[in-house]
Length: 172
Image 1: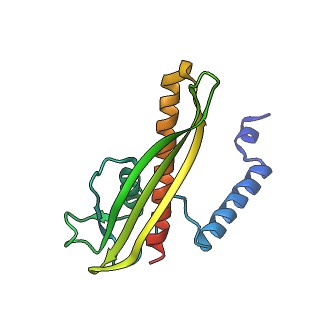
Image 2 (image 1 turned 45 degrees about the horizontal axis):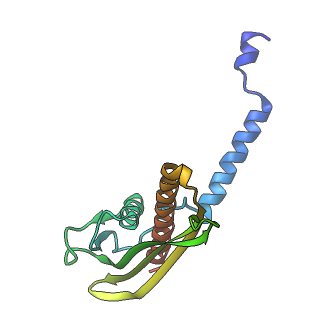
Image 3 (image 1 turned 180 degrees about the vertical axis):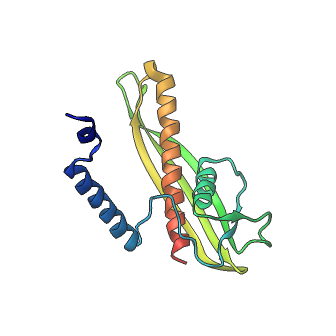
C-alpha cells in the first residue's frame, strides 16, 4: 500500500461518520439530553438549596446536577428564583437474611428524601417523598469491600433521587 493510499479515508469510515452525525442531529432535534443535565425553567436558574446538611450524598448530587444544568446558587432563599427545601434526607440499613450461626448474610439499604419547591415565594411543589431501596450480600471476611460496596450503593441511590428531583424541576 502506498503512502497516498494509507492517508485516503476508506469508504466505510465516511458512512460511519455520516451515520453518527445523522444520529446526533436526530437526538438533538427530539429534545434528548444526557441524564443528569437539566433544562431549567426560565426564571428559575438562580437556586437555593435549603437543607440541614449540605454534605449528604443526596445534597451533593443535587447540587452537582443543578450546576451541570447551568444553575447559579443564591446566597439565601430570599435572593433565589427557586428554593428546593429538603425536609428529610435519611439513609438506613436493615438485615434481610441471617446464617445458621445468626450472622448477617444480606442487608437492605434505603434512602429516603422529602422535598418541596418554592418559586417567587409560593410553594409550587407540595411535599414529595421519594424512597429507594437496594439489597446486597454481606460476608464478614470481606468487611472492607462490603463497606465500600454499601457506600457506592448509597451514592448511586442519591444520584438517582437527585435525577428524579431534577425531572420535577424541569417540568415546572
